[in-house]
Length: 241
Image: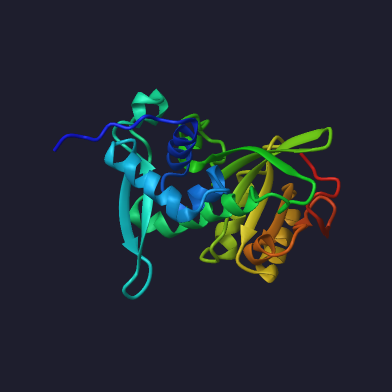
């Protein structure tokens, strides 16, 4: 069967890049990240065309009784767009739920107004970060660059699904202890867990901001626990870079 040919647009390039950077992402997530003004149904049709042409890889996974979702990653022909997409990393099935939580988190973080006056100017997912990861350095789930007026900075982002114990979080946080260039943003499952992770990070001397996904998805501006200031504050109030 002949592979269909498609004429690639600038939006198509952004879709393939986002799918590659995250490893796997759903159609709603890619819509939010790349073309929020487009309906999910319309964009899903284009994603299917890109998958048929080999620029994206598509798979479906269970999403509850009698339901499933389509996931998209970089396809076999994506390297024709950018050689970096060749041999794209994809998470093992055991990590799939975490990868989807990460993709939903970056969509929420980049939603206009979600961070108050902070504007996210660029982001990188785990698959992309793996392509230039420095041995021994922490490998976050995401890296975001932001601006606030004349100020700018970057965050390493860890997405917590509430499955790791206190000891595991201590070990994870220690990796950031000697990386003053990394201000860590932790997005977790509840306000109580965000507060507890902030306490651990502050005790270790790690510069971190912690919050929970419900706050992130709620009305802006986002509130975070700041380990440097030892208090809860608006995310866009004198952020640390």
